[in-house]
Image 1 (cartoon, rainbow, N blue to C red):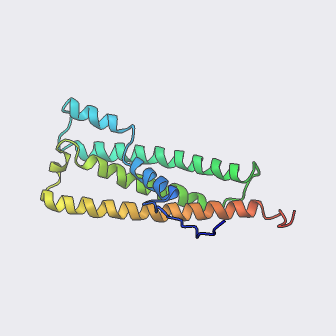
Image 2: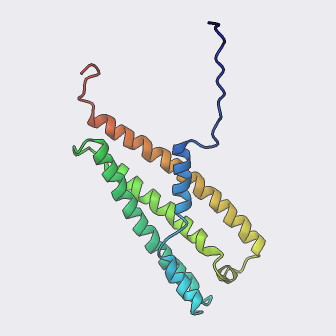
Length: 172
């Protein structure tokens, strides 16, 4: 038998699975079931520059609040599952960070998603190109904030899980 070298070709991936999931969760922030309220207002022409700011602000706060609570509950359930059903010690700062950061990011993303619906942007007395620049910058800030939040929350979840299994010996 001849011994020939083994060649391995590596086909790199553009995004790792966890990065794709993080990107997917960011893009999902732009959809909210509360958008139906805005769509109905557009469909029945209930919109005017007098009521648009109040309507958009109200819908955005409701959507962000609902999402923040749901995200927190899902995160807490994940922590409990990773802690094998034991009640982990979660600091109040961590709870506050998870809820407030998610509320802020979802608020900004929902606001960005409503910005260009119908002619809502015409209620803002600024040139459309300047609005596009502000929108793009805000989008970038929202993404960076989402990335930082995702990294921080994941790291905190790992810390809580490690503390829950602290009693397990390395050689058990």
